[in-house]
Amino acid sequence: MKTTTLIITGMTCQMCVKHVTRALEDLTGVSEVQVELEPGTAVVTYDSNTVGMQAFENAVSEAGYQITGSA
Ligand SMILES: [Cu+2]
Image 1 (cartoon, helix red, strand yellow):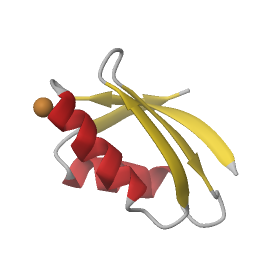
Image 2: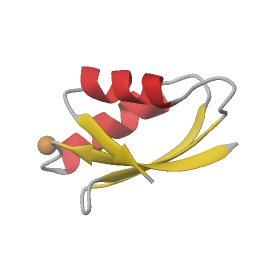
Image 3: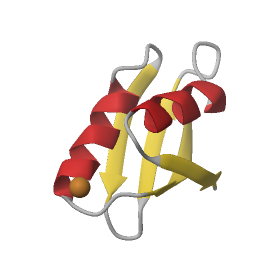
């Protein structure tokens, strides 16, 4: 398991937080997601053999937000 912090732009309220959380949680290989409106981050714990940055970017983008970086 690996943990990474994604910088997410476009979230303006707690509903956005729910949308982003669900989008990431629904990915196979993701085991834990913690999204914070301020400062606009998602801490994701995942199996790097199963899922990765491209899948995170696609899922968040389909939900209507954007990943602009990671730490
Ligand atoms: Cu919102």
